[in-house]
Length: 164
Image (cartoon, rainbow, N blue to C red; front, side, top):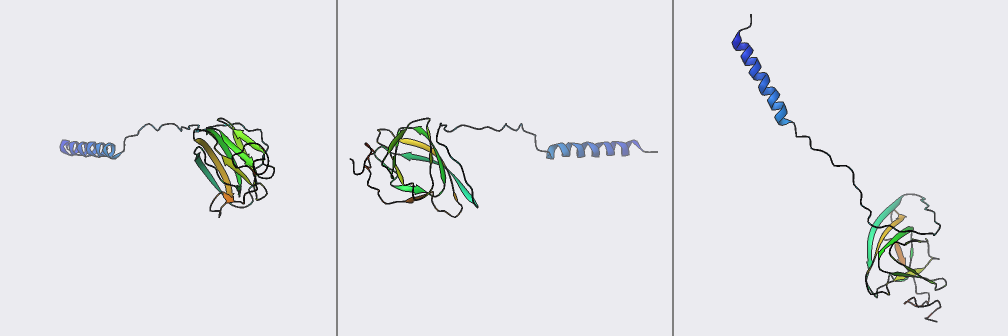
């Protein structure tokens, strides 16, 4: 026969163990749902393909071009898609000196390689803010390579070489 004191002791031990188990367990907090914020969005009608031969590095950047500043003449080592968030971004194509302006909500897709030299300029009075995705070779240290001036008007005022 089991004595009342043994039953009481066993009950007390069980209560302590159960209580200790609850005390050690961390409180289960509600896990918030996944959230996503659209930082910028734009539309492009430019046809493009993304080619990934070998390992690639993906860069996601916010770029700000101050009034009067430019990117300098350059070309891209990999695919680039940019969305203009604010301001007016002027792109000058080095091969024919053609000029195209992009405003908020527009996107541009940059071609790849040394035969696609171009420059971006902010001819406006407010900063241009762009969100950019670059897909470049994994060992590249930068997404662009500086290129010689092809002789276009750097202000982007009209097509023609040397401001013609």
